[in-house]
Length: 400
Image (cartoon, rainbow, N blue to C red):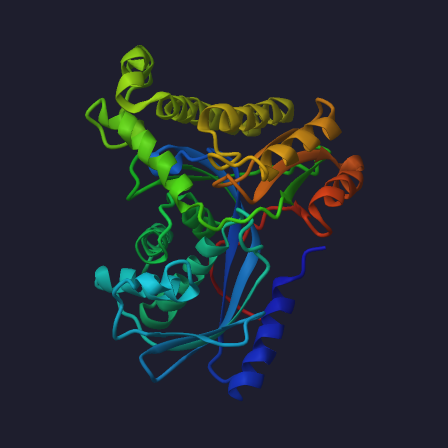
């Protein structure tokens, strides 16, 4: 059973008092992780996505007189410290917590917003490296803190998401799209259209898969995300290259019929893999529309069929289930194969998030979910299967 938000915040209050000796003036903030339900690698080319907020990143925070952020995270002995006097990107911090703190603060300053020091104790139930967007949740959490402490809550969810994405792209060194940050900032189940990325369209939906008899499971295949940034960047780069052949910067600006007519000529210019990845983009965009319509119509069978179609397209066209050249380690394809064998044409499964390593997503009949967990954990290890539910709360300040 998911631990209550209050229980987490009470624990953080106690930890803050143990470390700093005070609780006066403490404020509390939460931001969710996200699970991608549809729209695999479409956001960075201004496409459509379907996502749900899950799990929780939480913090107990107090203002500091010093112009410094000092953050202590459960599971880490040493604090993360960032001097706000210097917010320039540092190569030595890429991939580290300090890069996200510095990057979010830099995003505030860039937009003429205020920043200042604070002390924080943070705890997260968002599994790191799992495709559940622990980094985006942390970025949004940091943004919410600076927003409340120094800007009177004037920064809206879209701007917080844009600041978080910028921190991840420029400071952290990961060329992500905007879906993760936007889903975390918005909370609940959302479909997001990034046609206009500086002002994305966000619509709240309702979907209770357990009421339909299904468990949504994430399987952590325990494959490392280390050194995968070039794989992620290549997807975006190749999609952009196809768009460039039509005089556009992203695929969303290219008319689908124009693309399909031009496939023969594109092969020589950008290569077959880029063409296949563009095919995935156009069809995945349509699938998200179909998934939204199925949710509105309460047609869960149609929804599951589209989830499976997304999974096959990601594997065959997008090609993000294994890193190029990987032979010995192909944990994602193995997880998908074992899941399909277990489900025996029931339910659905797909690669989850960025891909190449990390997690897969599976809709499993509730009555079989325990057996599924045992089957997958026998291969990928104890605790590798998680059941997800939607967290309706959006990111922001909270109370005990």
